[in-house]
Image (cartoon, rainbow over the protein chains, first blue to last red):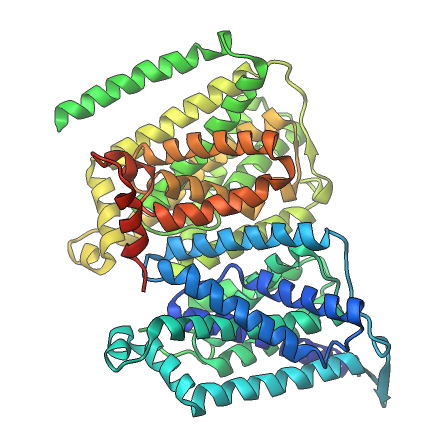
Length: 287
Length: 317
């Protein structure tokens, strides 16, 4: 029965990792930017929710659209005004630039929100229900459901709309996309905006489960990265599968091996997958 | 060209002698700053071997630093070896580690390599955190040496050695082989370069010098713990120095270390709480306006705003 409980915990957490990683994977797949500032985007989402919750008492789930919109706008401007300037440079530079942005965001967060641990605690935060021997916290279940809904919406945007087609075309072949009249600068910015929006949504829900601090992003950047690579870059389904794999790996390892090696496990997994299957579990061959 | 090379070498020798005489003249505070500066320069130059010449962006060089520091520290305090031997081991172990870990992960390219190395460094931090003989999370305390002079000369000597290695790479068969790998690995292999061997040697060399710096650092600072010597930020710092100075050049990383270390020293005394924030801003501005580094900036005959404008336009979409 314990195993089943651990399995459920892993899956519920995995959904959250999944939507973090979809954003990472999208930005990487389309623009070849490894977004070191991904964690801070999650942090920003968490703090926005923290503010709307503590200042105005908005429900964290109902304020999700506000957080998502705010992060979309922020991401759009970041890409349009700054990242687009170096997007064609070699990988050090975009990596360093997003790192610089990360440092700036983390330190601004220290100034705005201080280094205290914050948490978003709606009245139903501790409630759970039992199915047989299993306990399932409501919040985790709703978080998981929300991540599923968001993933589906995102997949529909990517697969069924003109915008999604334009993003995919730009990722496939920049010059050809430009020749057919796609405004690539704008598309890049929208892409980053979408990635940031998903990161923000993940952050908004993160605050209900775990503490929020200015430096929470570092570890989450690494996790998003691991998950994106696990699943295979550029494939959205891959990110979701990767998220579940990481969630399960963490859940099982902390139950059966103890909590001493949390990162070693995910990174060990990462390095092994990179060596034996460089394109990820669901990945295609790289361009 | 050959003549210029020797003039430069001569200038270098003079500079080294001038630096060697520095402890007699400068204040204790400046002396500590110089030791730190030398260390950062060693790290940047070591990274340059794998990241600059070979073009493999290692984001895990701090693993070598930490392993070097811990090897020296453990041998010094737990085993009771003399410092000289402990330090040598602190160079050899990271070198072997680089060779061993390098063999599988140097098959990865680009971002994948970068993150795999980052993963290796984080894993090492956790491993050291959990090992009994490294003192776990509480760290290791070294015996205290009153005089900073040995550290000054050791750092200077290592810096000299790693700079000479970089200089050798800039004009040797082996170095050209590394550059060929950076420019086009498949073509290099077709030309008969044993690319796996070349890359592994470069990674191991980078590890050896980084480890030595770590060993000296451990004894100099007298206290190490896993979070201090396996910090990701150290890797990032040294990459920024190398990129800022100019990767794949002999003197670029030195220059980058000098300018950025001085700048951050100034910022942390004058802006205190905003130091880290300004550091981040500087990274952003450097990437935007001078992506080719200081050495490219110096090579310009006339420096105008147009240079920065051209850089800004070059990689934009």
